[in-house]
Image 1 (tube, rainbow over the protein chains, first blue to last red):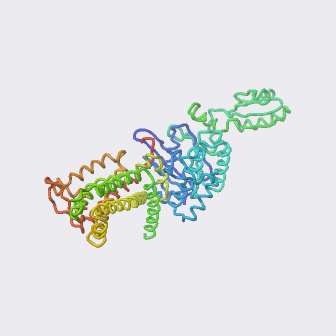
Image 2 (cartoon, one colour):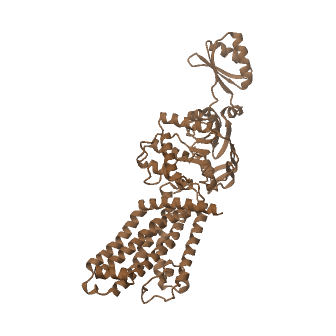
Image 3 (cartoon, rainbow over the protein chains, first blue to last red):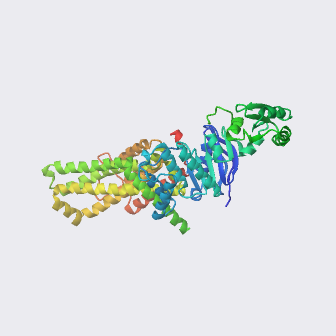
Length: 313
Length: 273
């Protein structure tokens, strides 16, 4: 069995409207974030992976299984969609029991697993209440439980943190990290970029139905040569560091920040800069507190690639 | 191969049980309850208000029930009941945006269609069979409990009741398969359903070559008491039972195959609804 999720030249058109265009991806096990503005094609891509949409062109394999074979795919895949809807009249418990029975579990096994999942998402007390009466956060959690109930190898989560309170968000992020650490594929879409930074360091950026970048944040950032890397240095004499850095050929900007307690450097040569910085610090006798890249974040990379004001926070 | 069939049967049965439960609780159940209730209410009204002079004639009740069965129980109660139950098997889930949960189950789409259809039948057949038996009992109670039970349990009534229940089951099988397909093809399956109903009412007036495209025509052979269709009806020999039943089952199977073909291409895109 293949260990990757692969998309090869995948197109999806809704009539004449583009959903996704020429997507080529190979997603390894671990946590991968799918990032893009509203309408960029994130949900389309996730639907395609789950077989809820069929590609107009191209080939998709999830651990070697085509999505057109749900009998083989669905035991491997759990999908938490963005739809805030449920079968009418379902309670949290009955919703999970139905799912598990359709997955071939015995009544006793399904019940034990359903309670386990409900506990995992903190819904034990509300298990026998109708989902229609749940709060937004509870509905989100029961959807997560549904996606995880049959212990799939691939978990696709479309905006899974929507509606969750900060505590629940932290718990869910921990759960995703745990699943990824266990060798599963966890594909998460989110609008909230600082959360994406927290969740994973591997991203797929999509815009206008096209994948504009993929890989680790650092690698993607490293490829953006047009945008000088920003490095924040916290030290006791930022003015000295700024003046000395400015003498370096690859430094394009040095400015004092954080109310005179730091200096922000913009450089075109990351490796060259770090090498020079060591010498510079030793020569000037400055006490450096921290040195950290300031724009090796999803937010920064997103802004560089897709631009601001696209509806993502 | 047999393992695969066993697995598909297990999955279809699991879905059928879920689906039957949903059908018996959802909006479809209200429609079925109203339709069944209307049939029983009419029969009860007849029991209360039938003039005394008509209460002696058992043959009159037999022919009156046969007509009520044909025009009301089959072409109204069962027909619209099946429309409500089966057309919503997929369409209902699209409207309440929960179809993706079904499609995320680990089963082939063909098995999903089979499971849903079976679930519809599990809800429809007992409901309409019980309505038929209840209506029949109320019709014959007009002659007093002694005569009614004598006719139904010691006379020809038992065989007639069995035939009527079988016809209801076959009608559910035929109309169910048709309405399941309508639910997959049309945004408003009631429009083609009403057209089919019009066709079923017109069938007695149509030439034999067109009569074969009717569920009711094939069921006529099984009816224990023939029903007159008026002076303008074009008479045609009913399809013999040995042919009518397999033919109806075969056509239903064909309709299910078309449904399965559509289900394989089904996509979840609620935004367009």
